[in-house]
Amino acid sequence: MQLPLCEVCHQPANQTCGGCKLVYYCSKSHQKLGWREGHKLKCCAFKVQYTDTFGRHMIATRDIKQGEMILKEKPAVIGPRTCCAPHCLSCGKKLQAMKMNDKYDFYKCSSCNWPMCGLDCEKAEIHAAECKIMTDRKI
Ligand SMILES: [Zn+2]
Ligand SMILES: [Zn+2]
Ligand SMILES: [Zn+2]
Ligand SMILES: [Zn+2]
Image 1 (cartoon, helix red, strand yellow):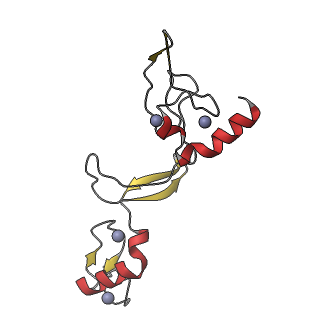
Image 2 (cartoon, helix red, strand yellow; image 1 turned 45 degrees about the vertical axis):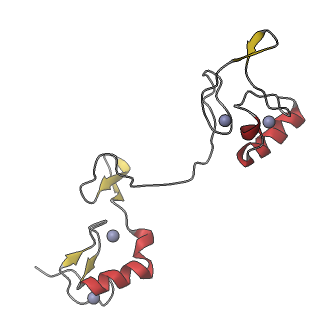
Image 3 (cartoon, protein in one colour; image 1 turned 60 degrees about the vertical axis):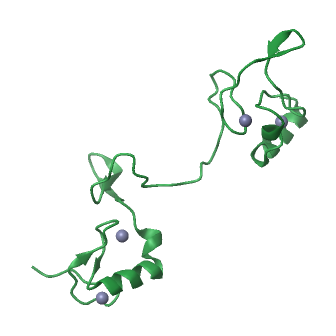
């Protein structure tokens, strides 16, 4: 059997990256070098593959511990579900009605009038763009 080749020097290698088990190295020092030269951005515990039965899917490249973080991405959209009890648009917490002028109601954003936690969440950066749209359109 032919030995796999080192990612760095392309000589026969017998060590794999412990993070992904996908790439090989001839030595610890080349593993460190490869990591610094960009493998740290590519190293992950899964790979994407294609089969006719399942289409495009991910498979683990090593054992993954329960609760281990394997992927971190910024969400494309953040917000409460369309059908749920009122949740704050900024922090996502479920809101508690407060007693105000003898009736129970939620704190409302002073600009768009949507229910939120309070002034801090109303002024939060994350709410600014939607607040302006909802205020302008009176949603
Ligand atoms: Zn090497
Ligand atoms: Zn790796
Ligand atoms: Zn909030
Ligand atoms: Zn608002």
